[in-house]
Length: 357
Image (cartoon, rainbow, N blue to C red; front, side, top):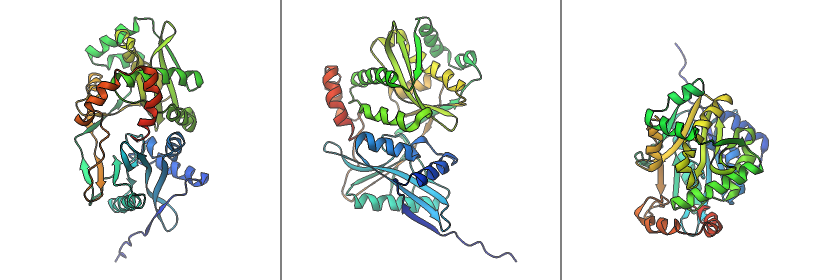
């Protein structure tokens, strides 16, 4: 008769993020886990902390031999405008609990809430990942992700785009636009100039430039910037992350002239081809709010939405923090922000946006 299987003892603890060797081992473990994202990496935790000052944490599950069985990366985000929250992961669209079993996931979720209480954060947010069984509210209808395989060559990639959207790309390709890629100072200057104007036009405060600079520094060759130029002027630009065979266009946008030039359409098509030449096989278009402009833009490219589940827990009597610019609460603020002169928006925007997390 076979002996019964003994359950494995799992220890939950907070990782020492100052231990470079352990961080490297944790990142190596993350990279081979199903469902992992670049936002689970300690590289991301460090970059966000350096850029914003928000404290980073990683709660890990290990067996008695020290083998990693799960992790949840966290930032404690604080703002006079938006309050305090413990989020996994800061400024990310993913990075929730990564665990091999539901039991480990539940213990990690309990540890997250314990840390939130300790840090006096009335809200904890898990963006994707394993869903805790108890104590958390699950939101599954607010966001969707968009991802698909890349085609085998440039022409096949163009033909993979639905007909109406393909026509927009072809119009842009006839405009004589120039594509530049890199991760140097010139590329960052171009990108931030375009990105800052783009988000001002959308009515939201721009993230700190340091956020992009620290991300490029942390990820090295696993991040770059692709910029579209018209007559030598940057009109569209995107900073992308490369992770496990996928390219993720993360921070991107275009100036007013980009629409008439179809520069954003050319940018994403060029990025698909650039990523394939880098060895990528998948294009992760990232998260969008359901029924938003970005949501329908990605559908027009032939990407199918995949609903995302976020887990939120709040202290008794507290309301979840609201940082959604599309909510009625911020409608008048968004409208006013769109009218701000760009220098003013760029001056005060980073101070505000640091609290969004």
